[in-house]
Image (cartoon, rainbow, N blue to C red):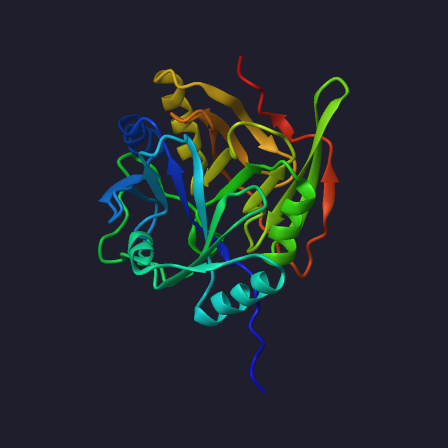
Length: 298
């Protein structure tokens, strides 16, 4: 009997970001975040590395100052085709990548579609890896937690939470980690849902708020707490605006801080998040985002 192929994404493989100020982004990525600028792709995007993969971020001079695509990895051709069939059956139109698109992403194959808010979602397998040319940060940091966990996590603002949850949970196969209901002002609160597709506590979180940008923040997880502390000092010394100061989250227990990127959305820089084992994990809800700290700047 043939083994049934699981139709779900495995990790967040890469992000595409459209920006206005490419020079500011190259400086921020390399000299603050500690990413490795790895030249240009075939489509002119600046490539940023954080591990053995040839690109984790592709920065395009297209001016949106926002995420323009998100790439989710699956393990192989059968998994991609199973997910393609599942999406099509659910009424989501998918498109096979052209040779030029596959070259730009450096993948063996890829399909793409749109989420309910119009964000381009790419599902790929066979990324180019470069063990023969190891990742080297321009900063004295120990590196990032990636591997099966993917590059980190993203928080997206969505105008229709029901539609977004149906797409990401029922069609892409994300599982619920937990919920946070936060009061942002008297009589005004938002309910966020946190989703996982591997042991990382969450690869995706959805926020039902209408903002000009789709991307609320992305997160990078460091291998050492000292990397977070030294970068926090660097951010303050360079006068980069903090979004939230150092703190520890209630749900994933990550110690982190948030800084403003040159595009205006935030980057969470953290360490120490707990992981999920689906065999034992229980979904919970929280009414605060942090155990301590994470005070909003200004």
